[in-house]
Length: 531
Image (cartoon, rainbow, N blue to C red; front, side):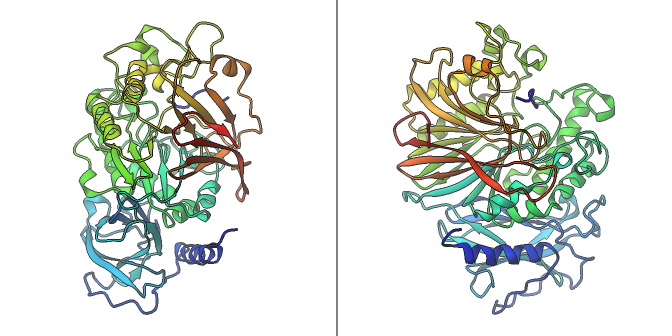
């Protein structure tokens, strides 16, 4: 749901890789000199250029990573332009971008039932190491991708990452993705609304969606394919591994479990069974088009997306899914309507199983930083003057008992250096976290960094003032900005630094990027400090 609007030492190597990735993404074939030959495992010919959607990697481990691609010479066709048969796809991963030092190779079979996608789970790699990878199908060779494994357990390197959310094709150009790629992060967290489900022309005029509002598997596949034709998104995927989680627009705006936004029969929402079929299609297409392991392939309407990634002793990331298991929003999900239903102990945003898992993940962590990448505004968001609590009912305000359980666990178990990462709301925010947001004298438990959108909401504005009522009612809020962009983070054992990177326009391409504001959290000292 969208609430109401309120040069480096590696520069030469960076330019070299980005030039290669860009050329490959435009259709050039990079064979790489000196690479050992790969045994033939595929037919000699496949239709056209099958790698038009690029390559990607994801979910890094200390010894491995997922490599992804999809064969689709005609990306917007129902079958992607591929024959109705499996195709063997060879992959290889190397220490260098010219593939003189290939360290692993293998074969995956891209099948029609999975839209001819590949999810190669590569193991046996070195921790916290840079690799390059590519695919071959018949005589066709993919663009080259760069990836990086996670640090080894017990080690404490600085971890550089970025997180982003909300990329609406119709409302702007994905310029911020290109700037992220130029910074070569260790990993990118995408916190949802990777794409939007709306029909062509409904949501903007900068670019146009292909087709009607997504409902069938073919429609979801085509929309994912359209987004991956964007050169800036393809470049970012080819530059850094992604850790993804979804919000609502990957399926249907503002849905909760098997409750749709509305009961429109034209969108397959008029019965639970019909919406379940829509969700099943959305989840299948999402898994197909993301660098996720095969073990996460959906079964019926379920896709187990919450998971834990350890980056040595520096940070543990507990990635949440706040959409699939939640109960329906209180008060019809009306904006800034509050009452006892927000505190309903039977209401949940995570579901009991995921909630217990999060507590175990926090308890097991031996890392300095305990980071929770998730989708929805976590802190209290009160836009009503006076004693009324207000609240964003599609966010954690609508599930106050769930939030209190999380913060109560952090407080009672003394979970140190607790940081929440958030997307969804199309503006930058920074919040300190307390168990009782109405009592600013109570103990600080952590911080929340909220990223703006990549394009959703258009250019935004230069204001840093959401209105006096926000400052009056939310003393935990430290920063606001309405431009587009992402958050760049650098995390060490000593401190957590967050830079809000913004572009001043997205309705035309080519905007430069700048840092609008930076914050630091010192280890063991809860609360953000402006730099």
